[in-house]
Image 1 (cartoon, rainbow over the protein chains, first blue to last red):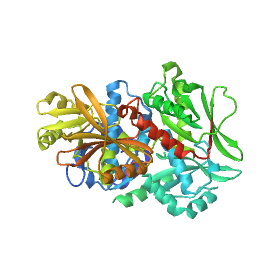
Image 2: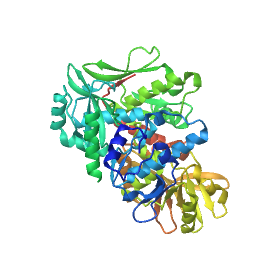
Image 3: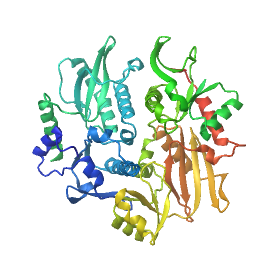
Length: 226
Length: 295
């Protein structure tokens, strides 16, 4: 689920020709059923023109568009419908047994800024950084992609960050797993008291110049979902 | 000092502040109606980092040992909206990141925002959860209505305020509007209504009775194992204060309907004996700790 021009969606769909593709707006407009009347939860939805038993999916790429996240519905009833639909899909995705990249928690819908603060605090704890590292979250500096809590590549100038992540690998992977983060970009900030994560982007974009990263991510995801 | 954040017109904020005053506990109310005047900064204080909350020109700062927060939904007037929301975001960051004890931190218990997600977590924690269906398809709802024996309850899926409605076979027009938004459907469970309010490691049980004269509340009891589960789930969700709604069927099965992360405790206590507010203040005093918040 991503915008049709999302570079990661395009790269992934070339490697997974049978993938079902839809946008966030199409997903939220789809007929949906989540039942806990049986011993195991059962969920299904109409996606990309067909009825899909959601427990039969091999994986889910969930990348809501920044434009849709920021958009305000025009009417009260449209706002209510979006609110209720998001709450329903939050439960559906939260209960899916397959690999989801990334699994959106309720806080990501309630207050995305606070969610990002929460993610940053959690990573700082996983890295055992002292409280003095508390600083305002800011996007900037050098970014590093993490898949399932493991660094995907090593941009120049981030050798210290790599060493820090490796020294706390188990804690960082546990943090990523608990937060449902299959793929994130971590921004690092250098200061007099060392290198610190300064912001986390849970929906990393891939602009021009990121082709190698994009390819690496698509290959890794496709291998796991084939 | 205890810091209380909220709207003084909110009965819960009013009740907690009244108990603090009656017990002569030093406290300060940060009035959210005037949040635009509030500034939050991270400063160096006595050799370590601390959060400084400044309200107007308020003189020298005092350390805060515990915080009780219950947000008002929005600004008083649209004109002050931008500054109000900026201050509110800064306060939420502080509440989320400070070491100072908070009842309750924003973001804790967020699964309440999606009722079906919360029900799945309650189920995993060992609670009895009623069979549930979330759907925006009238045909699915109709099938479920039959499985429920012809009577079911329809609720909103999210935490947005919505009245639960009893649905019977005659309510065709309402179900045909399902395409607009999904609903949470559950069988109607007849039986006694209980609310369990958890404050720290204490669980207080209230029996809720409804009749023509209105709603009445009286202290009651439920099995100790169930109350221990309520306390454990509250802690698991990162909360100090919570409230669970139960229906106990005639067969004695206690079904949990919901856990509220920011409960309206004054609805379940009397003004002359506000025992839930007492419990909250007891907990705030017990939690008092060295602070990294100054106000």
